[in-house]
Length: 216
Ligand SMILES: [Zn+2]
Image 1: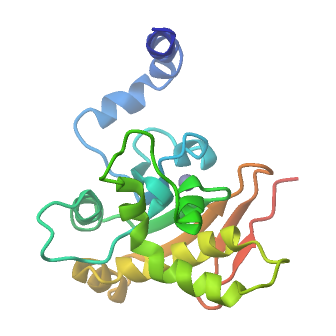
Image 2 (image 1 turned 90 degrees about the vertical axis):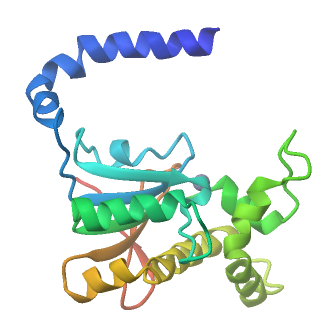
C-alpha cells in the first residue's frame, strides 16, 4: 500500500530530523502539556493549523472536524467530542485562547450550501448533511440575504457567518462563559485562504474579517 508506506517513510524522516532536533522539547513534553491556545479547525488536509501558525509540538491543543463547527451545548447528548475537548482545554489546560479556524473553499460549507451532497456509501445515514445541519439556520439566513444577487458568492459569506455562529455557540457552555467573563479566556475567529495564503482575523466588535498584513 503506497499510502501507508508514505506514512512509514514520513516517520523515518521525523525520527531522523525534527525528533532529534527537538529532543529536549519532547523530553519536557513527555510528562505534561501546557498549550496556551486551543484551535478548532476543519479536518481538511490542506489547513493544518500547526503548519499555518508554525506551532511547535506542545504549543497548540487542536480539535478538528468537518467545517470547524462548534455545536451549542446539548445536555441531553451523552457523548460529544467537541464538548469533551473544550472542557479539557478550558478547565484542565486553562488555555488563554479558543480560536475557531476556518478556511476558504471549505467542502463542508459547500455541502451545506448545495444541500444535496451525498457521500458515496454513506447510505441512509448521511452523516455529513446531518452534521452540517448545525448551521442550516445560518445558511438559510445567508441565502436569504444574498438573495438573487448574482454578484455575491454565498460560500465565503457562509464561511464567515459559520465562524461567528460557532463562537456564539462556545458561549453556551457555562465554563466558557465564566472563564471569558473572568478575563481568563478569549474567543477568536480566523480564516485561512488556501489559494493565496492570506490569514483573516475576526473583529469581535464589527463582526468583520480583515487580513493580517503579510510579512515583507
Ligand atoms: Zn473545511
